[in-house]
Image (cartoon, rainbow, N blue to C red):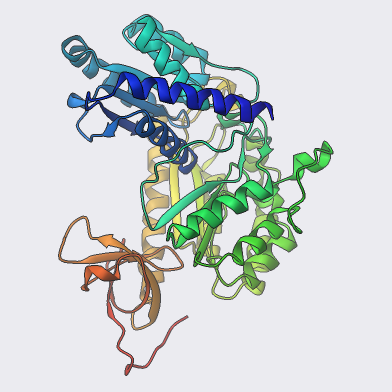
Length: 480
């Protein structure tokens, strides 16, 4: 009840700002950095702004509010933010633009201190646990003409019923939990997003049903560690309003699979150590759950994994992959890999290459290790030289790209079910969509196909995308 009362208070602030903006044609610009959770948060910020009477613009120069939703996973995000803030100084002087900065980076004191010292013209600073209070912060910034700082160092709560303006009308993301309890030694996320806390099953199911009514075809369930959904609540004996049989991530998948209108279900990110048999069984038996599973590796060496605090070995990871391949038909895998973690030797890096060779991932998201202030990894003395990191990265990249080319060949000549997402960014005469395994397919077709799942025959592969043609009923299907 407490959170509901807080949201009702924020709705009053939304009305107040809307009254201020009446007949003023106010515009906002938003820059989102980081992961899909950040993108989902930005959709909520956009929802609040549009209810307050703002319309979105891609041109920062004409914005009355310039909003940044920040990420602190990689160092280049800081450089990007500070560069943009520098550019905005003159625009603010000319136009009076309100500058608001939120997200993960604002939970880091050394960053907020730098902003206050070097960019004193910012108007609103808010963290990951106070996003729901943005209408109040904005109202006070407008009325009081002084900076609003709204950051909590304690774990936040789950707030339901926030307005949302989604980026797509075909695919939607749904956050099922916030925070993380894993404390991987390279990662700042547990420190800036707090401990794991799950949304109530009923709230999630109701949101997905509403999304389905609005015509969305695909959803992605989001969390820092989705396959530990409800685990902490069980350990702490926190009781939610009972919703059918949903008491785990596996049962949540099964319940969402029943919802009419939703045709594809994806999720990110699971943790290998929590990938239980019931989740594998749910993926295998739920026809709407995509068989591309993101399974972060980070390193293929057991010693490095231990230093990373990942809580599994190389052998355990490979055994899990084999179990999943045996039980899930047409399984494909994507992964995350960090190159150059402190202390990693050339021989240990070769273990990573070995896992990549054995698993043959469909997609690999590769990162050069970046030191983050406040993490155990930052304090390790055996940091790897940048030149060495880049050489290893290039070696991994070459292997991954050779495998992608090989993997792509298996699609040529097959018929794939493709969710048509829109026109191609590079050629408006072509349409683009994605397969179950998240492969981009470009093809010629009528725009009335957008938003539908259709059969396409794959005619050629081009490293980062496939080409296809509309399947004609008289042709023989050869899918996998």
